[in-house]
Image (cartoon, rainbow, N blue to C red):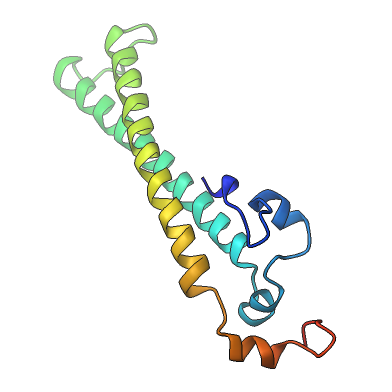
Length: 134
């Protein structure tokens, strides 16, 4: 996903965050490198997705315990616990695949249409020697 994305010169996101910004004018104007911004969005949504799936698993586990286990926690080796974990892992994989495709489209849209400066603004921010004006 975002780690596989390429900047304007083919540089991948991880390299771009460690190396000088491939978007120096945009970074100066917005206060953040567009690639770093997209990468942070990816990381946040990925964390939220994992947390949400974990909470679903907890809620289903509590429901099973309340309905069919007399309110007692499921034993460590209860087959229902393992079935629930397997189903939860499958659900997480499905959601992750959908998220990966969507975040790729989001990244392309943001880098091409939102966090890009019009040429006239770039000209105002760029010094004659090619450096970014502060």
